[in-house]
Image (cartoon, rainbow, N blue to C red; front, side):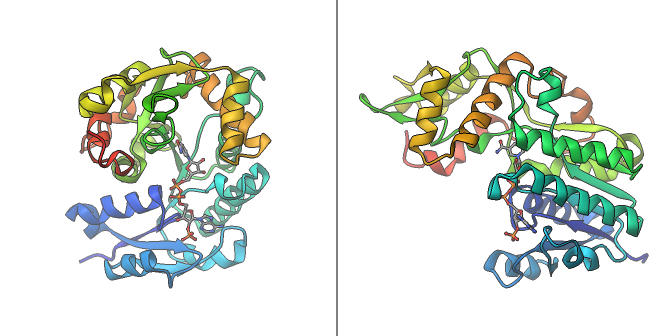
Length: 318
Ligand code: NAP
C-alpha cells in the first residue's frame, strides 16, 4: 500500500478544522488517502486528546509564532488553513498569520493550500464599507497567496447558521416573542452555512477535485435564504414559539447600541453593522451563484430546517 498523504489542519479543535477532520475520517476513501496532522496551541486539552484517540496526530503550534508551526509542514502534501479573527479582533494580526502560513507552504512545497478566505468588502463596495476587517484581511491573504503562485484553492464559508439561534433570532421584551432583529431589510439574501457540519464536505470536494479547483474560490453555503425564509423556517420547526415570531428592522444606531449592551467594543459594532448592511447591497459573495461550488460535493449540505431541528440554543423551544 502506498504511503498516506499528510493533510495539515489548522483550527483542528474548532468548527471549520474539526469538520474537515470529521469528513476525511468518515469517508473510507479519503481516510485511506490522507493522514491528518491537526494543529492546536494546547494538545493536552480534552478535545485535542479526543482527536488523537481517533488517529489524528495533534501537534503543538501557535500561528503567531511562525517557527512553532514550521515542523508541522514537514513532509506534508496539503494544508487547510483557518484563522480566528474574533479572538483578538486584529486584522493586521490575521493578515500576518495568513502570510506566515503561505510563506511556509511556499518554502516547503505544499501541493495544495486551502485557505479559508472571504471577499474584500472595501473593494466590493467601492469604499462604502471599509470596516469589515475580518473579510478584508482574509481577502488580503488570498491576494498574497495568489501573488506567490502557491497551488491553492480558496474556501469561502457562508454566514454561519449558528449565528442565528439565540443571537439574531431570540425572545425579546416586552412580549418575549421571538424576534429576528436586523439593521437591514427582511429581503436581504444570505448564503447560510453549517460550518461545524459542512466545512469538511466542501474541503473534501476541494481535495478530490484538485486540478479543477486550483486558483478557484469555492462558496461554501447550503443556499441563499432571505431573513423572511429564516423566520418561516423557524415557524415551521417551532410552531408554538413561531406563532408570534416577527422580523424587526432597526436603525444603525439601535443595532450598535444593542451590541454595546452585549459588551461589543465600538470598532466591532461598526464592523458588524457594515457586515449586515453590505450583504443587502452588494451580496455576501458579490451576488454569485452557488452551482459551481456545489458541483464538487458528494454529500448534501445541511438545510436551515435540519439545522434548526437540532440547534442547542433552540432546545426546549416548541
Ligand atoms: P473556532 O471554532 O472558534 O476555532 C478557532 C480555532 O482556531 C481553534 O481550533 C483554535 O485552536 C485555532 N486557533 C486560534 N488562534 C490560533 C493560533 N494563534 N494558533 C493556532 N491555532 C489557533 O473558529 P471557526 O469557526 O472554525 O473559524 C473562525 C473564523 O471563521 C473567523 O476568522 C471568522 O471570521 C470566520 N468566519 C465566520 C463566519 C460566521 O458567520 N461566524 C463566517 C465566515 C467566516 P486552539 O485553541 O486549540 O489552539
